[in-house]
Length: 90
Image (cartoon, rainbow, N blue to C red; front, side, top):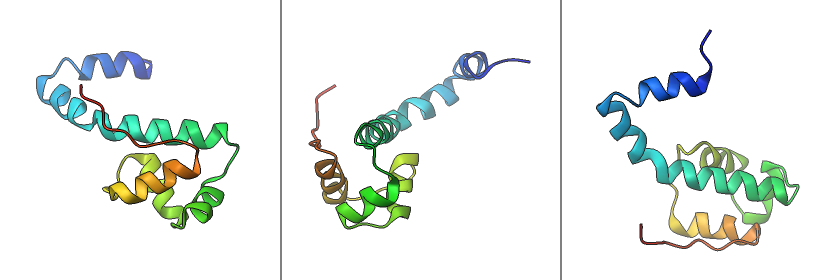
């Protein structure tokens, strides 16, 4: 049985898969950062949602990388986590 790392490497050899993967990278970096910061603060999604004034479902969607939230919402959530949303040139 192959592990995920091996499967991922094989899939990324396909140019179409690689392009789609690369296009989603910013969303998944944001999601990873939010999860990491929330866990570091020892907060549940529900606690973060309450403090940020959004629903727990919104936090779950942000953390899954599947939500096209507003910059204002992401900034508000980041602020609750003691973080700041920044755009950085690649």
